[in-house]
Amino acid sequence: MATPFSGGCLCGAVRYECSAAPLSMVNCHCRDCQRAGGSGASPTVVVPAAAFTVVRGAATFHSLVADSGHTARRAFCAACGSPLFASTSARADVVAIRAGSLDDPSWFHPQAEVWVASAQPWVRLNPDIPHFARARARPNAD
Image (tube, rainbow, N blue to C red; front, side):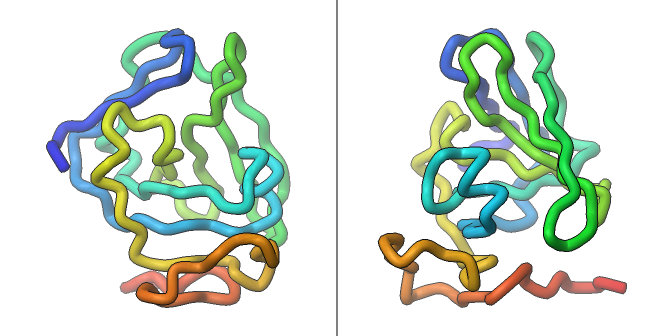
C-alpha cells in the first residue's frame, strides 16, 4: 500500500486522499452497512480523520442513529450514488473509507470481521481473522 492513497466515486465527481496509513481494516456486517452498500458487508479502511481530505467535489451525507446509539454519517456521491466513506459520533477522530472506492483496492486485507451477529447466512466469513459479534474493542478505549 502506498501512502498517500486516493479514491473516489464511480463518475469521478468526488475524489479524496489520505496521507496516513490505515489504523485498521475490517469487514463490517452491521445492518446499516448492509443497507447502505446493498451488500452483505462493507469492506472498510479506518484512517485518522486529520489525514483524510476530499480534494474534488463534495460528498452528500445521510445521518442516522445507529444501533450503538451514536450518530453515523455516511458520505456518497449525489451524481452516481457511490458510497464513499463514513464517520460516527463515537469516534470523531477517524474516517471509515469504503474499500471499493479506493483507486487501488488490491491492498485491502481485513484484520477482523465485525458485527457478525447480523451477518447474513449467505456471506462466507473469513475463518483466518478474528470475528466480533459487535464492534471490536479498540486499544486505549475509554
